[in-house]
Image (cartoon, rainbow, N blue to C red; front, side, top):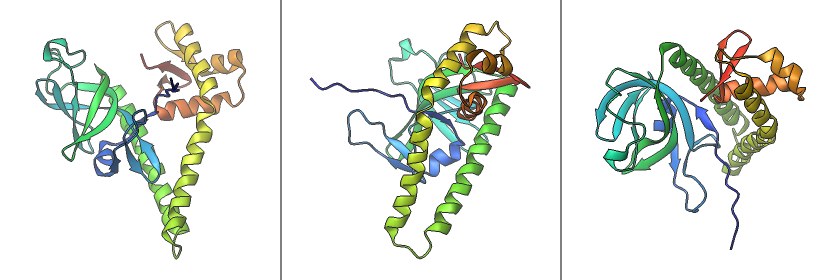
Length: 230
């Protein structure tokens, strides 16, 4: 019997408008997720924050300030884990989920959802804007480099971007060690970055922490102090 190594895709912090307008690629492979293609970057999972502007049964309609999208749970209504009577229109929520499409309509299949506050929402908005700016520069670079070249040149450039992402994935082991350190030493108000660097003594530890902040695996509670998402 064949063995499969499952690897959870990165949950990107990204504006919902990008999810709505990117090209959706439905996977034909059983163990490969469908994704939104943004200049070669495959977005299959996202995280973010927004306001509930509509609610019906096991669906919520949320708005992050750039676009609106449905978030759904596909289980029996009496067994819903995340969408319940405690959630109301106007609530601020933080979510993690998979990007899906049905009948040409994009939606988010929930993995995590919880109420949050304006500080966390502002953090996600800031990170989403940084992602949008980075992706915009990448797009401009691709267009500039492929002027006058055949279509395959653009495909090669997209492949380079994917390879850069794969190189970043090599650092995941150290990132997991950082994450475990935070969870074990957080007494409720976060952990100092200086303590992580001093105790773990990992190569490029501060750079890895910055990447984890960008990816939304951890967040800053104040200058020099961070927490892990629960």
